[in-house]
Length: 396
Length: 119
Image 1: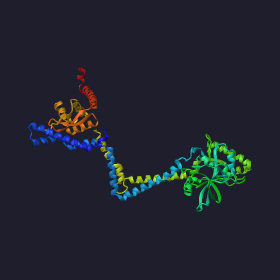
Image 2 (image 1 turned 60 degrees about the vertical axis):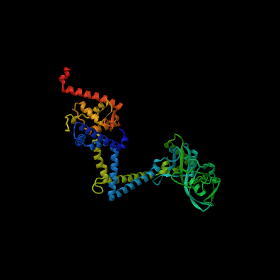
Image 3 (image 1 turned 120 degrees about the vertical axis):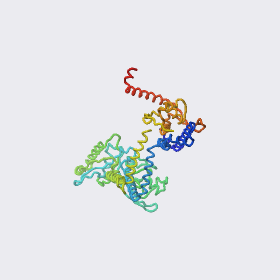
Image 4 (image 1 turned 180 degrees about the vertical axis):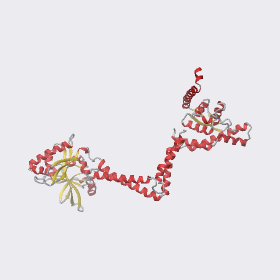
């Protein structure tokens, strides 16, 4: 079967007509030769041929791509019905459009949040480091770390390749231009190393940056660098006054860098020595990169060991036991997504069902006036002509 | 001219016409009229070719590339569409002929069991 004949079937029809014409003339000539009257001969020849239109139709049918032709015809029929019944079609189309649009919007979020992996190298090795504790009968699953605990973990943990803690905040930038408030993330040097994203300019934080009395350092987000410094490459080494303390710019993160689910303008080096023993300000989130081959269970076990060492060291053992403090190390993705995942799934289901329900209503027999156009397109014309086409082409 | 109704015409086995057309074209290219005449005369007018099926059949064979068409000039100097057998058509003819002969022999055995035994 050659589909190209579909496009030249009109030319083929002209040829067919010519051929039949030739046949009639030739037969008439034969009849005349046998002694028939020329006028009668022509008529007799036509009679012998039969109905030429039927022949041409049969040939034309062979050159038809029944399926595509049918789809085209259904489409045109649907368009006509949409035009003739705007009272039904417009609300139907609008609700479909809204349903599909809502679905796409929600899916975009789901894709970003649930399906896409974290934008860091080997994201499956990244974990959030917290403790779980029980306060007066209530289980707190993500009790943050104190700087004291950070120091203990850093010292004793064996399952982390890199480990750091961070805390979000806000600060005032003064000194250059108008004062402004910026979103900050104060972090120890292990955080960016754990995430594994190198700065676009300059360097990562070092442990030296965290010393008491050392020059305070900061890394700019790409956006803030563009906004505040116009993307000036000479920004490294400049001093920026944050909450009246001068910070030296040591780096700029790349444009594509995302810090978990936050968008801080600047990253500040966290001074660790602040967390003198006894400081129990527990508001730091931990992030770590597991060593190769270390499972979550192994890491939790490891940190449980570290906790007991820490508790013995600072006399907190009793408190830790009372509060039933246990390590809670989980995939970092959970920190980023949180409980949004479940909510999103429900939302997507609802929107999906909405779109489906709209479609179903439109296709129901009797929707709109009399029989719904969509239903008619879906069922009647399609099915009948399908049968008809099969019957015709069965001769082929 | 009165139209002769052949008793065989309406019962012509499906696909037989195709085979007869192919056989006719073995002798050389011909146009539709000649093919019809050849079949009618060859069968001593037992088989009448219905033109309503001849031309669609020619078209069908062309689509299957068993025959090819070209425009030529007829005996009376008119432009006419001629058909010729393709190599593929020749193969098909051989296959169909042997299948037909098998069929005829099989039916013959049923209708004339005695003759068959004697022969």
